[in-house]
Length: 305
Image (tube, rainbow, N blue to C red; front, side):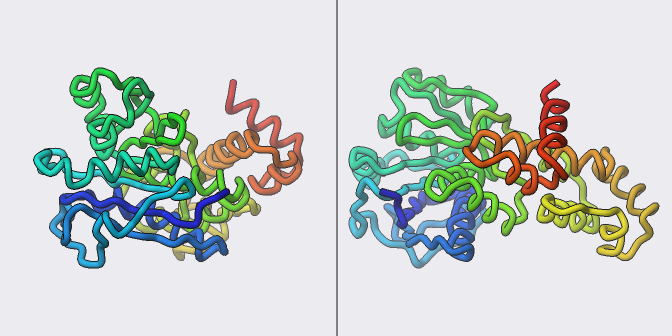
């Protein structure tokens, strides 16, 4: 049975994006027609974020009993401010959640909480790249996997840093509602495509977003949202009111790649993901913007060579 309840566990000094990234995926799922009942719990009455923002509409752990159909997501927190003297306030609840058979997932440094609760002993896991060595040293019974977006060990998931909570949440959405729906949610969020856990902690999308040109960001967002359509440089140029020639120059200067190369790479990434599903080749080709299944096969072969 699939779950329609997601319980977000919030430590004090939680990292806001670790929480908001995954949360937004489930919220957007509702906007796309598959709603979730989202609950927010904490061992603290008014937990705060690492950036100073506070929460008020948070339930005590005792008010929510987790069952096997639930998804529990523990957002990453600032390790230096994580108060281990409070373990008994939250650890039994988290252990009971795992014992119930629910999906329990950590984002970023929250893997430390799963490890402290004994949920990862002898299991594969991951965390933000800056903390993998510390995690392995502190919890030697774990098998810490480096440079992975997220790792699944049975019903326990751990994800790397920050935005990878989005990838993990999209994966969970896909498991419940299928690849086509996950792609719809990703597209609605202007996320280029859900990366799977086997891929590295960086992506084509993120590698080419490390610039501050807001107009090129706008063009990249448009490409991401319209991969299934034929995209011309003219229509992209019209978006930001420049000539096609000027756009070509600006795009290459900002991203280090051409518009054509960027679009092709995104299509290849999306195609490789969808080819892991049971969808027909013709549907995948159309979804990725290829004119035929032969073009799809050729493109993916080039990407793999």
